[in-house]
Image (cartoon, rainbow, N blue to C red; front, top):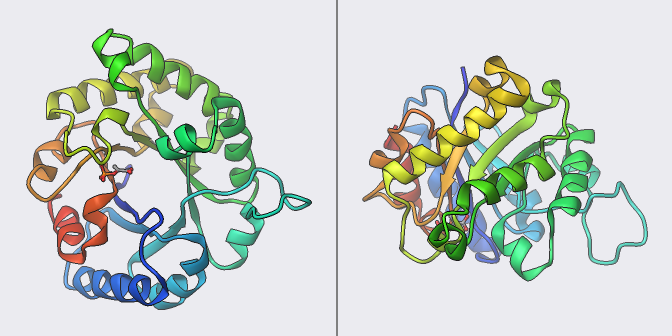
Length: 252
Ligand code: PEP
């Protein structure tokens, strides 16, 4: 059975002390819950990963990276490889976030290489994708999402999908306060699952967790997460506050 997942992307926020304090608070609150088939993941910035892994070890809170380089090692100044992440106890990596695509020029071809690099190191990939506002206004959102998925992850063999989590994040809803309606989210998530069925079959498709991301907060989480094809969320702003973040976990 696929898992529900609430994953917090801390982006370039929180210094070392704030990162440790936030994960500590999240851990304490999560320890009070009975998590039934629900995973809780936080993604601090690179420099604080080791420390947060140490604080969170032996808790139910998992730690992911926000990005990685596709190569194993070499002359890539300033970059971090999958092997390095694995070496400090990281099990998952977010790839393809719209901010990486928009501000750092990450395209589908590069992301496919990063996905391969991550899987080679046995890292789980949280693969992000989603349309811009113009795509939705011109009714092109399904085409855009299909192409991002086909180019980014549909080259994989069926067996690799056990390490893939998808995160549909309409760019117009990220950090804007504007959320896709529960109907819009379900419609797109069902479309995505059907694409997986068409290529890999129902067995693979039913096991893939598909997260929604875009201004999810305590006030709208239950409505969005209760859709049959929405298996949780990738959370930005609301992940920076332990009470808000854990209340999203409770909304399952
Ligand atoms: C995100 O950046 O992935 C995101 C969903 O941000 P927010 O929740 O702030 O919209």
